[in-house]
Image (cartoon, rainbow, N blue to C red; front, side):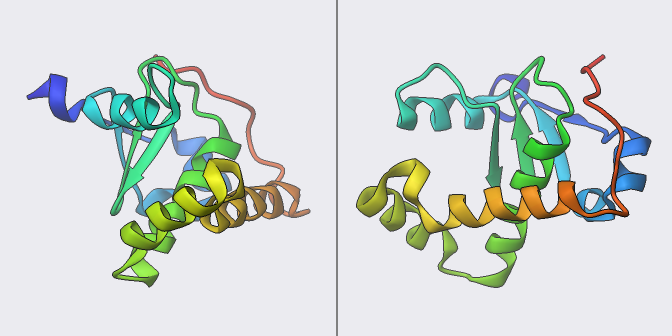
Amino acid sequence: MRLLLGRPDALPPALAAAWPELAGVRWRRGGLPPRVGGWCLGVATVTGITLGRTVWLAPGAPWDPELLLHEARHVHQWAEDVLFPARYILESLRRGYRGNRYEVDARQFAARRLAAPDRAGPPLVKEP
């Protein structure tokens, strides 16, 4: 099962304290989802992929606040729109991955959260 679903992982407490919105996300490492995401983009794996309230991180990916906030925004997008998965695929087909409005929104969200004056936050945390 671990080959398919990866393994549960715990967000470092310093990151949860700096960005409370990260605490509501389920985190997993490895498994099939990052590989499938990579195949869709023509690479071996993606660093992170979100399905519902769960974010799968590639094995060895650092706890990068920018990546985590980006993926947390995708969790919000899933929660806001029951048709999100279909809309995301259509956006990707029309505009490509980088131009997909959901990806643009997630990048902007992460940038805003990182730039917030009250959120200096900790640096990258390597996976143990």
